Amino acid sequence: MPEPGPAEERPVRRQARGLKRMEAILDAAEEEIAEVGFANATTNSVAARAGISPGSLYQFFRNKDEILEGLVRRYETEQGAFWRAHLTDDDAHTEMGALIDRLVDAMVEFKASRPAFWALFHGSATSDRLAEVARDLHEGVAFRLAEVFELRSPHLPPERCLTLARMATAMVRAVMPLVVTAKPEDSPALVEELKTMLRAYLTPALDG
Amino acid sequence: MPEPGPAEERPVRRQARGLKRMEAILDAAEEEIAEVGFANATTNSVAARAGISPGSLYQFFRNKDEILEGLVRRYETEQGAFWRAHLTDDDAHTEMGALIDRLVDAMVEFKASRPAFWALFHGSATSDRLAEVARDLHEGVAFRLAEVFELRSPHLPPERCLTLARMATAMVRAVMPLVVTAKPEDSPALVEELKTMLRAYLTPALDG
DNA sequence: GACAAATACGAGTATTTACTTGCATTCTCG
DNA sequence: CGAGAATGCAAGTAAATACTCGTATTTGTC
Image 1 (tube, chains in turn yellow, purple, cyan, brown):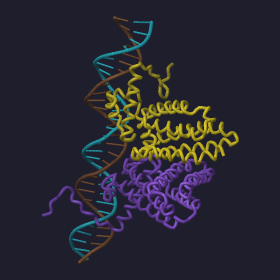
Image 2 (cartoon, protein in one colour; image 1 turned 45 degrees about the horizontal axis):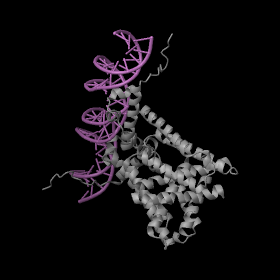
Image 3 (cartoon, each protein chain N blue to C red; image 1 turned 90 degrees about the vertical axis):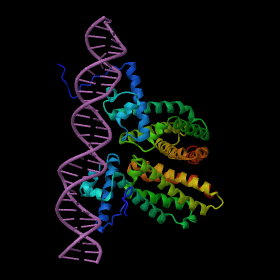
Image 4 (spheres, chains in turn orange, yellow, brown, blue; image 1 turned 30 degrees about the vertical axis):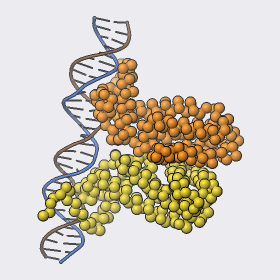
């Protein structure tokens, strides 16, 4: 006897066409949210941007929040891949200055390539949900970085490494808006300044 | 002949009662916005919180944005007073470590005393307008700090001082969320960490 | 005291917008 | 093929909410 239950959750078998549509909707939502913020983004407008009707949009996402959720999952995946690519255990042995160089450059490049990501997570934040996810993403990066620190300086207690990693990532996030708003010719100098700061803080703490 | 004009702007002569009401409305709006964000804050709810009717609210603020504007003006005033009190030209001669100590402690205390301020400007930002104002407030602080740096290190070019001041204030802002979200017993350690970082960065640059 | 301006009310309106509904079309798979 | 599922549409609905309106009361000024 198929009890109707609280919310008969039959998963839809998506066709290739549908999956493409979902990506298109997320792209549209990303644009829209980056421009006007999540609260001011209307589902109808997102649908229009994606070139579909409102009804079609709700074929794939049950409500507005679920769109956000979809975006978030996509970001989590991208972010994970990014750090797996740029922060390996080998980095425990690279010289501190070089490591900072590489990581900061990579992050600057990542941000430049995905302005919407930046606008969503660091610009006018757009919802409690996004803020929460942003925190989680940042924590993930800090954890990963802390692991490398532990490999590099086994004599330090793990929680000390985590604190250092949290502080370092917070520094990077703090300076990014300055880099973005600065005149283009001043940006490199600010990035250099950030590296200097990180070196001044991390080198004595880790290698000293 | 009194041409009606585009928008006959007759300023209202507020009575003491009215001014008190306006403050009460701003207090209510501050609470409400801090809790649910500007977009989700309803004017009716703000009115209720302030203990008045929706109609009365619109006696003092022509629309929702004007409430935000009122909040912003209040913050600008408070922020200005705060820095005039805590950052005088005399500080050009106080020892660097002591100066950092004082300023950081003052900021932490300020934030603790006005959680709504923090939620508005550093939490999930709530509107383009707020984000813009936040930038201006931060720039104001950086300018003031840069002036002190110039007095302290006359041999440095002014724009170098401004960069250092911007970086320093950015660092402080970056660490504040960590301090807030950390377990209460860990907060002091993080504040200490922030001071250490600022010393490591600023001392060689200014006094070196 | 009297007049005008300011303050107060709260039911009502107009608009926005998330989401539904009914139906048409296209795909998948036996 | 053909049946059922997935996709597609666009007008429409219901709820939320910024703001108005007509009116009543209080306050400042002469």
